[in-house]
Amino acid sequence: MATSEQDKNSSQEFWLQAAVTYSYILLWIFLSAVVIMVNKYVLTFAGFPFPIALTLTHMAFCSTLAFLIIKAGFVETVHMDSATYFRNVVPIAALFSGTLWLGNAAYLYLSVAFIQMLKATMPVTVFLVGVMLGTEKYSALYALNMVVVAIGVATASYGELNFDLIGVIFQSGSIVTESFRLCLIQLLLQARGIKLNPVTTLYYIAPACFAFLCFPFTFIELPKMMHSDGGWRLPGGWLMLSAVSAFALNMSVFLLIGRSSALTMNIAGVIKDWLLIALSVTLYGSPVGSLQLGGYGVAFLGVCWYNYQKLQGARQQTTTRQQPGDLESKPLLASTAPRR
Image (cartoon, rainbow, N blue to C red; front, top):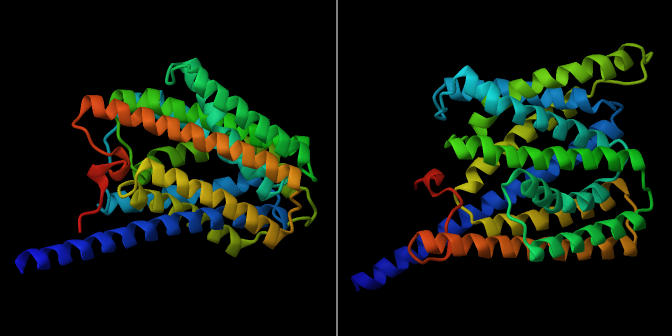
């Protein structure tokens, strides 16, 4: 009888934890969609075509809130001396600034749907940059995957009905800077044993990003804002919603990363991409042709196969170092999983 009761309680606990985990996943997908769709609206439809100013708003808000959260003692931070900060964090912040600026600038020229399709090239650039910097090992099978993804994205680009070269250049620049940022994080932070959660990351990186973005803002966007003769307006409510959503998105990552596996997050990312394409078509009337969808489908399959191979490789490495177990059933950061 006691065993039956224990099994019942164990089953209830399992379903409760599963419900919480998938609620976090849905929250992450929802907030990701909100941030992207709101940014697109602010820059394209709300009369505020200033991507650097939008990014500055995000960084100022995130810096302030992260500072208050850490000083209030809600989240523990990592002590970092000035030498470590300037050597490790500042280069990452510079690249992150470029990622956000160029990525937001692309919304002025391209649809959300096409931007999501271009983002499928992220594994390609991360792989190439990783091989160049030594964080990835070259593999003919991985390289073949990258070729498949590149062909798919090239086909989607050829089928794009509102293709704009400037927008593609901006988005490509954002992908390249993000790839270098991810590799530098692995080289500069993980190699030195520095562990940063999303709040601490914002605490250290957001102020530096704000400082970096002030330079292009001063010389590129500020003169336009001052001499546009009322050609733009300040959508205060939308800017605040965008900033709050961006911060909440980082917090949702903090909640999610301790409870889900790498495979779960990759699947959730795929669902998010397709959702954003659908929202772009539904809300903003973005034209998407059959050739474009076919090309993105090829790239999507290539990315899925690449992720599967990476996860299999990670599982084999973990199995050789630790006791056998199913890597996909374990959280990404078990130590940060909320205790309930």
